[in-house]
Amino acid sequence: MSREQEALWLDDLFCDGQSMYGESWACRVTGNLDVDAVEWAIGQIVARHEVLRTRLTERAGEPVQIVGATESVRLAQLSCSPEDLPGALSRVVAEPLDLDETPIRPWLVRLSPTEAVLVVQLHHAVVDDWALNIFQRELMHLYRSRLLGRPPGLEPLPVQAGEFAVAQRAQELDPADIEYWRERVRAAPRSFPLPPDRPGSADPPHRAERYVLTVDPELGRAVRAAGRVLRTTPFTVFAAAMAALLWQYGESDEVIFGTPVSLRGTAAVDDMIGYLCNLLPLRLTVSPSTSFRALANATRAEVLGAMAHRSVPFSHLVRMSGRKADDGLPLLCDVFLVVDDMTWEPLALPGLAVERIYIPPVRAKCALIISLVAGEDGGYTGYCDYDADAYEASTVARVAGRYAALLAKCVAAPDETVGHLTGLPGTSAAHPRSTALSTSSPGGT
Image 1 (cartoon, rainbow, N blue to C red):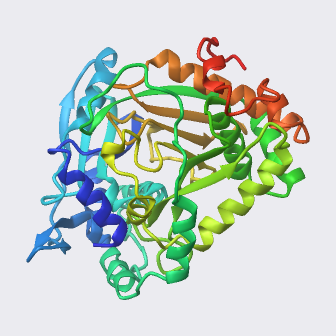
Image 2: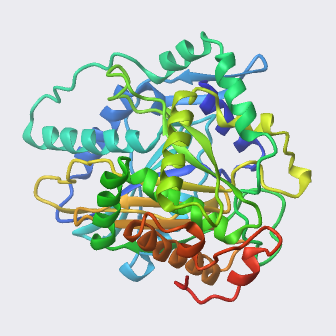
């Protein structure tokens, strides 16, 4: 296994079959879907990408991945009413995927003879967001080829996921990278400083629920414009606003949160489905007198540093931090920010009306993940997936609303201080900021 796969596989061993790492790709289909063509197309994708027919298991005491033979694919099918669809989809994505058997399971949920939802369950150990884009692109191409009776015409992959893992394991981690992260994670602050609404179980996994935050097109355009003014990316603007938000809730003048970073970057792996991603922490110092411009510059430097040293797996960073589960604190990062500005090829299948849908996870990976997905109108949809065993929906709505309001203030006035933007000028660690925020209404600042 790659180092990143091994970390997820080990985590799964402690979850008693209830993996935190279930992913899904889904679309709603209206029209006469050719089920045989869908099964054939998915089967071709599985045959093409070895990782989708790979068992992650243990052999002679070592974690390994074993590529299986190419087999035909069959959709698991069920029927439900449109009213029962959300519950049915939740049950589908909650079905366990045993990595010792298969990392993928496709479903067809029938709503009527001409309406259905196609769902593909995948384990995170075999896909990242880029891989889901590849899956969608190839599914469209292969389904169309089958209907038209044309050969697929896809070029052979230069590298498979197993070969990537072998090459990665052949190289030792760079001591300079390890030393960089040793300093960044030492004595790290609490990642999500908001106290839980209720004590949750210490044993993972916890229930997940989703709150949807809308970043309207006007604010989305303002974020991009601020990025140009600050000479940085939209991600850095979103991340700097996240740092200001966490500082607003916390008692320390340091904040830390995580973000996924791609391990891709060469043409050899750009068309390969696999988990080529690492989670990395961003650690920043914030004070009331820090301007948002200065915070954005510091965030940009932190992101560049993380990217330059991205080869050290997150599991190594957790161990380097020295924090243990019995410390009473989450391990290193309990809040993550994801910004998906990827340009996806529009989803289209011949003779069908299709719409990509996003199914909420059923198990929480951490306290809070805010995933901002760019829309065609210039705005973003923010999927706030949170630990429902620890936090109430109203609490997450309040946090999300405050983040959107703070983001708008930051991009409108980048030279204002964080203390002024948050409405907490002169705040110090001696006066916990979270106390002042705890009674605010949803969306308040």
